[in-house]
Image 1 (cartoon, rainbow, N blue to C red):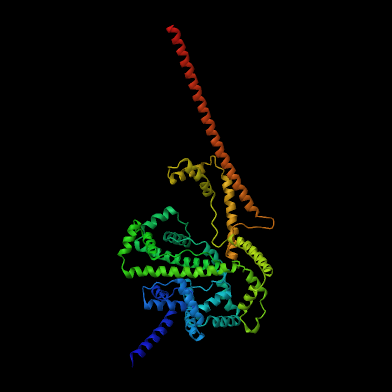
Image 2: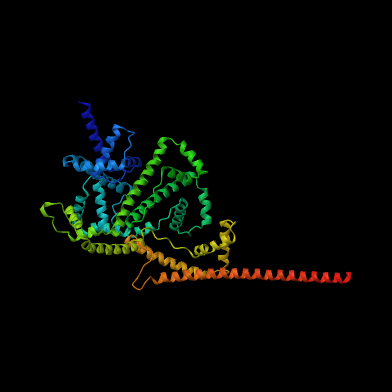
Length: 540
C-alpha cells in the first residue's frame, strides 16, 4: 500500500472518530480543540476572494511591493468584468465553502458555549419548544439536518399521548420564571452555601435556625479541604448562572460587553485567591508562566471572544429589524415608479431606466426631487424616535440615601475641597441618621418614582428588546415624567435660593463688618483730632 492511501484512510478514520466523540464531549480541553478553528467571521463574497487572490499574486512576486489602493482597485474591477463565468466559478465555490463553514461554526458555538437553541424565543419556552430543543440537540450530535429534525419532531408531538406531553408541561412550569431568575443573578459565595446547609439541617431536626454569630465561628473552624468543597460547588453554580445570563442577554437583545483578554482572566483568578500584590507583580507572574499554562488562558479568552461575536451578531440583527430604512434620492424615487415595467429589446432594466432618467428635463426631475425630500423628512422623524430608544438594560433605581448623597456631595466638595470622600460620606451618613435639615420625605418620594420608572422600562425592554427614554403620548409627555421635571426644576430653584440666601447672608455679614471697621476708623480719627487740638492749646 502507498503512503498516500494510508494517509487518506487515517484522515477518514480521524473524521469518523471526531464525529462520534463530539456527542460525548464534556471535557473543556476537547471543546477548546473544536473552538480553535472557529473565528465566526462572515464569509467573503466572490469578488473579495478574487481581490485577495490578486494581492497574493503580487506579494508572491515581490514581498516588499507597495500597492497603490486606487490603481489596484480599479484594475481589479476591470479584470473582474472581463472574467468569464467559468473563471468566476472558482471564487464562487470558495465563497460557498466559507458560507457552509460559517453556519456550522455558529451551530457549534450555540451548542457548546450556550447549550440552548432559544435565541429566537422572546418569552419563556412552551412545552413543545422544550421537546423540540431536546430533539435538535440529539440531531445535532448525530449530524442530522435541523429542518428534517423539526419535521419529525412536529409529527412525533402530534402522535404523543397526554401523559407523555405532561412531562414537558411540568418542565415548562419549572422553567416559566427562568427569565426572572436570569435577571436576578447574584454571585453565590461558599459561606452562603454553608449557612444554607446549616439552616436546612436544623429544619430537618426541628431546631431553631442558627444566628450569624453562631455560624461565623463554625465556618472558621472548618478545614481547608472542607472549605475547598464549598468553593468548588459555588464556582459550578456561578458558571451555570452565567450561562443563564448569556441566554437572557441573547433572547432580550442586550448589548454584549467587550470580551476579556487572557492576561485579564489570569489577573482576576489570582486576585480572587489573594495572590497578587500589585499590577506589576501580576505582570511578573504572567512572564514566569510556561507556554502550556498561558495557552489555557488564551483558550478561555478565545471562548469569550466567540461568545461576544455570537451575541453581537444577534444584537445587530434585532436592531436592524427596528432601524428605519434610508430613503433613496430622486433616481430611486423614479425607479420605484417604474417597478414592474420591462425594459425594451432585452436591455438591462437598471441601465435602461437610469439612462431614461438622465434624459428627463429639469422640470420633470423636480417631481422626484420633491418626493425624495418628503421621504427624507419622514426618515429624519423616525430616526429621532429610534435615537430615543435604549437597547441596554435599564438602570436600577437608587435608594433614598443614595439620592441624598448625590445631591449633598457636590456642595460638600465645594465647601471642603481638600477633605477625603470617605470622611465626607461619614458626615453625610451622620446628617441622614440625625435627620436635621434633611427633607427625607422628598427623597423617599423620588426613590418610589425611580422604582416605577424602572418597572416600566423593564417591562418595555422585556417585550420589545428596548425601552424609550421619553415616552410621548397624544397629549404630550407622560404625567410621571412631567412631575419628575417639575420636581427637578423645584429642587434646582431650592438649591439656587439656598445658595443665593447664603451669598446674601455672607454679603450682609461682610457689609456689617465693613461698617464696623469704618466706624472704628472714624472714631479713632476723631480721637486723634481731639488730641491734636488739646496739645495745640497747651503749647499756646
